[in-house]
Amino acid sequence: MKALTKRQHEILIYVEERLRENNPPSQREIAEHFGLTQNAAYQLVKYLKNKGYLTDSGGHRGLRLSDEYLENTRQIEGIPIVGRVAAGEPILAEENIEGYVNLKDLFGQSEDAFLLKVTGDSMVDEGIMDGDFVLVKPTSTITSGQIAVVLLDDEATVKRIYIQHNRIALQSANRTAGYKTRYIKRSEKDVRIIGKVIGCLRTNVN
Image 1 (cartoon, helix red, strand yellow):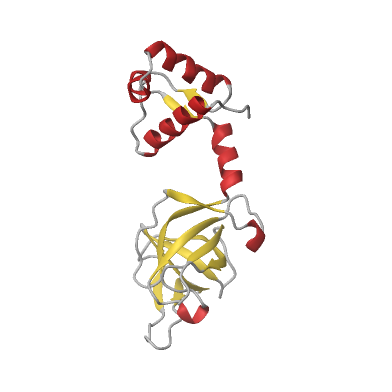
Image 2 (cartoon, helix red, strand yellow):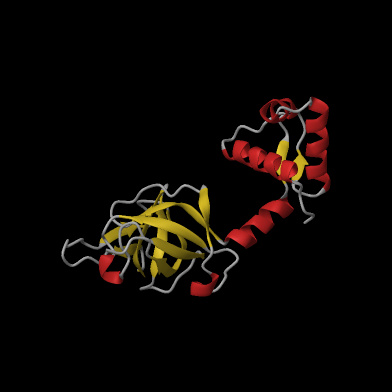
């Protein structure tokens, strides 16, 4: 992508921050924020569009980041951190990217892999601690006995999964706490495998 001037880069960052807040700015607000005339703001936004950083979906708040810019950002920043997943009581794993971590040197780059933050201590005997990030390879099928992320209705959890005839077994790994294996009949809940856990990243070592 073409290089930006300092002012163009400042405006791009401002637009990106506003979009992250789900509050896209108008060109008038851009002008006011940077102390510019509306015509100057219009020209700067036009340059950002021409250079492929922004697109316009229409309307006075139609500015959006271009697909090309988003893809370049992902490649530079690494694997996305997506929501949270519970190792204990399941919690909702929302599909909101919270940031990026570059793990290419650790795990090898995977285009569709993502990170989920673990809460709870039910998988500590597998080396997955509270606050760790598990690296997940999206897949709807796994080999019985693998560690995976499973969606139960609208809630997600990470466990060692055993596929049985009419039910699925979610096995914890914490002998000290004595968590019991949870059995879910397919008729009781909407059970869906989100992905296989292929790595773990520790962020806090005592």
